Image (cartoon, rainbow, N blue to C red):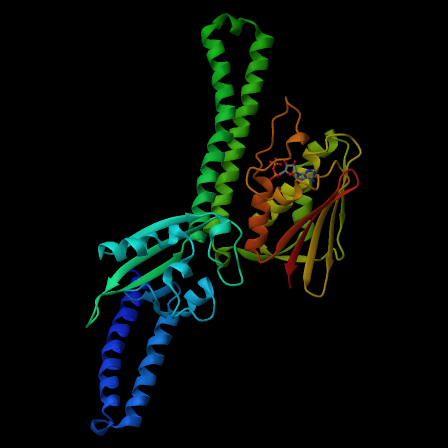
Length: 400
Ligand code: ADP
């Protein structure tokens, strides 16, 4: 039994108890000579408030309709979800609006048996969810069951639980698996193709230059497979590690940047690029997990270089303090990112396709999503602005 079911059970018990108490009290109130009138009124009010606070503590929308389909009780979550402020007295079908949401209620009403369904609604059909409509598809569990009455036909309780967040997470997970398999399949198929060529025409092995060229291509693709797997492992490591388990330490930003520049030195030389360190204070320290900060800054500086192989690229690592904290910015004057792509670049596997020529091996499309998650794990935020050909900047803001 989960927590929600427990609360729901309590709420129903409370309602039943309240119903009985109410009937007894009303009987006595109708015959005041037998009762202590004022005290009974107080007991009735307190029972009603007890019932309401229990139902209102329940996070799912909860309604009780009588045999005529008129709402007799509802909790605060139901009002926020289905509005208006007063739902009691309204027809349950009119309140639920969408026929798909109403289906379990109708089934329960017609068969007298409990009915549960999980329902996917498109954005335009979703209940309002108060002041915060999510904009996307929504998923609901609607659970209807009869509640026996001391007299007369049963009432029906209806519970609506919003499962949209869980659904979205599941969707992200499925997309990730699908994208990862797709990204891995391409290089594996290519390597497989070359190996097959060798097996079907072993005389190719005697043609040294061709054999070496094929081996070189295979090596590039296996390198890509390794990089995708490393990136995926890193993402899952960041996501499975709560911020509290990061290995926090103070370290000099300049040292971390210099390490990265050393690792990228051959690429910098080959592209005749210049990388400038422009810190507001050479002794500025970062408080965080150095392994992740190296990864963040490495990905950003490497991206600037990777996307701009033409000579003359300038990359600047800039820092400054503000009232709210520290800002670290990686700026380049390369081809930049078109405005239409900017909203998506931090998504997993997203690449600005036109940046890559056909024969070039693409990046994994995971670099920036790793950067974003790692920055957020440190309580920071990252944004990107780009004026293609002039200035592209990745700005990291860290709280004090
Ligand atoms: P990738 O592995 O393809 O580099 P990223 O997630 O690191 O993946 O980057 C996503 C896309 O953003 C890249 O494909 C590239 O087109 C674009 N991008 C990232 N940084 C820059 C930059 N400094 N200049 C131009 N484009 C960039």
